[in-house]
Amino acid sequence: MSEEIEKTAEPESVGATSAPPVTPSVETTDTNVVPQPSDWAGKSVLVMAIVAALWGLLGPIGAGWGLWDWRSGLTGLQYSFFLAVAALLLGLIFGWWHRKRAKGNRRWLRWTGMAIALVYAGWMLSWVYTARSVPAIHDISTDLADPPQYRMLALRPDNLDDVPGVDDPKMKGMNPMQRWELLHRQAYGDVRTVRMNEPVAEVIAKAERLAQTRGWDIAVADPVEGRMEATATTALFRFKDDIVLRVRPTEDGKGSVIDMRSVSRVGVSDLGVNAKRIRKFLADLSGTVSAT
Image (cartoon, rainbow, N blue to C red; front, side, top):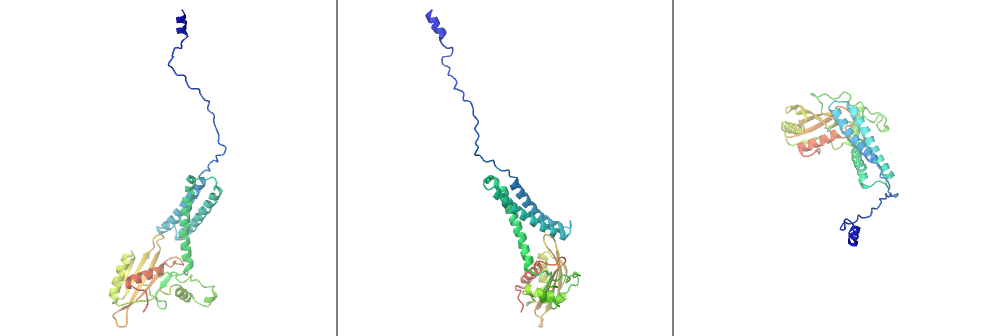
């Protein structure tokens, strides 16, 4: 009987392991964690910078393809510059405001936007500097006393209407032609007549080949008369600049005296483009731009 009682008292599962005690979960809150700011600031700076750059690119392209007036394209460039500057300023303000809270992974949007805005604004400022460093004229010639004349192409009727210096005491009493000559000499004294030891016909033939490689639209290339007229087109705005090359024989008839003129069809200032074109073309044509 005692043995039966002992067997009955034994547990049903002797080898079973008891479950570990359950520890109640306790939620902890770190009151020292600073919440991350939203990245709306960085996104705003980035979007503004991208819009400014695209605006500055599409404005000239649209004007060049006739979608809007070239003046509207220039106005768009101005506003895009202001937008880029605003993106830079906002980036600096947001950076200072969130300087203790923003982490590295929260800064790249803002820094990327500021970099784009800085590059674009710097590019625009380089053009502003160029515009201020050259006179607001658009008719450049190697011969100021007797500029080469257009025959196939027409000279713009308002060519000398907006020559600066009307209110300048140093130019008092000067007419537009005289003011143009003075400004031209001061800014582009190195743009001068060139001589080559080649006959006129050969110079014209060589000039025509050079013009073709530059993509100019040649209106006439006459080796007998010693004349070439062509039109160059700029890249973005697709401005048209008319060019005339005049080649005369030297006194002994063995060489050539070369003069060149480049005139922009629209605008007041050419930002030095015409002078640069003449220098480069004559350098490639003769190997020198020095008068003899």
